[in-house]
Image 1: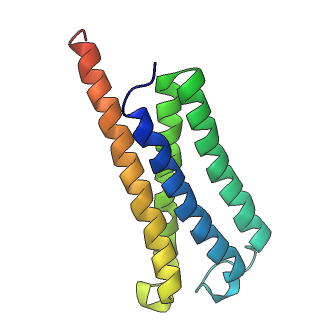
Image 2 (image 1 turned 90 degrees about the vertical axis):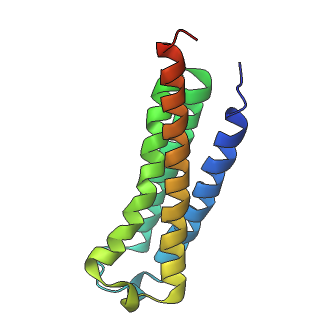
Image 3 (image 1 turned 135 degrees about the vertical axis):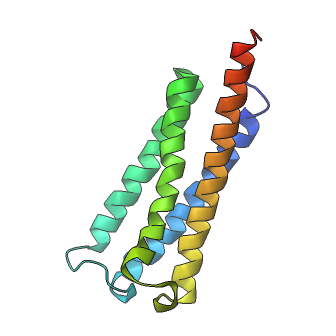
Length: 135
């Protein structure tokens, strides 16, 4: 019962997952170089946050493919939206205060998260339209 969109969803999720991993890796390794982050934040805390993000994606895809398209879609949308959380770096320090690598990893994670979120929303909306049309 796979649709053609299923062949696009997993690669988009993996692409966002790789961008997210890259940003969190950079954040954990260079934590003290990121401007104005709270002193209590540790590399272990960064990794714990990434595990939560990644776990949400894994759970979302598992639910989507095995239990409930709707439930999985909602969780995948949450997973994708987590990509926008990296933009929070700019609430504590301007873009210019971050290195090129910091900005690239932040923006790559956000951009791939948006692409995934738009794709999931488009799929959900088109499924909803088909259902309301009886098809």
